Image (cartoon, rainbow, N blue to C red; front, side, top):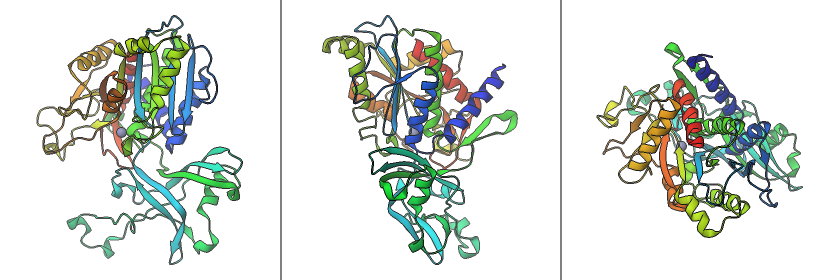
Length: 429
Ligand code: ZN
């Protein structure tokens, strides 16, 4: 297969991954499902775990998944190489008592989740997806087909919109329609329950979000572009799954290779399944306990360990070049980016930069840098949080995209493929 063909195949597989992952819960489950199909064993956090040496394991905790490969010759001080990414994306979450409506329309009550570009959610056919907690104690995933839409007001009724800008009232003007009739006779949760084959009367709790129903698409000259929902940050989660699968198939890595796909990054990561919570530390503790390591040996292992925190970053936008640094201007198609920030919004430092360049070199991948314009501060991600929590040296990287936090973001096909190649080089370094 040529490089272009294998990049294309990788990105078609990413489109499948995104379609299977309309919510963070689906994404965590899809990580586990794919790795189990490649011989990983799924562990339960409430059970005792088997001996770790030579094992390939995965756990799912709510919307997070952690997967790892332990070399068969691992010692009590073998370091970890953790690829960190996140399963959630900004958008909308269903409120309690979600079946609403007015004037002959059925509507859904939704709450804004994280910082979406609200306008980008207009006029799309949306799915409802998440998990249901049932009366018998089971928790099941549920996802409808195209069901809802947030219709934009016609220009005839909003003459100034192209001059004054679109300002949406977050409460009143973002509530989707999903049918016609009287809300008294309708039940949105019953639609979601039916999609999972569950009895609506048995639903005791739900976490459900909206997701674009449109599949990701490759397009543009030389098929350079890939547009899709949830590239932030399923592009990194998917690259990690692909890379870890290759690592497991190839035999023993030198370090313990870990994929950490956290939830709740878009809210600041403070949850039991977020990067600021204990989930990664809990797993690492159990891995080292399984190797017979004492507390000092764990610290020795951490001191030699690495975390590659992978999340999307900004490509230079040709229409808004002034928003970017005047010199450092990454662009789609020229490779994954190394993210730097003087105020530690990114954890990358000189030593991390050098390591990243070495991993890219060994993968045969070119890389670019990202730094913010001083007047346009950047966001942050899981890197600094992981570095702060565990004291593991961390490098913030990712792929450059446009339209970050849009319902449909834009990435470069070759960058997506290259990220998976560097991820594999990182796991096996
Ligand atoms: Zn992100």
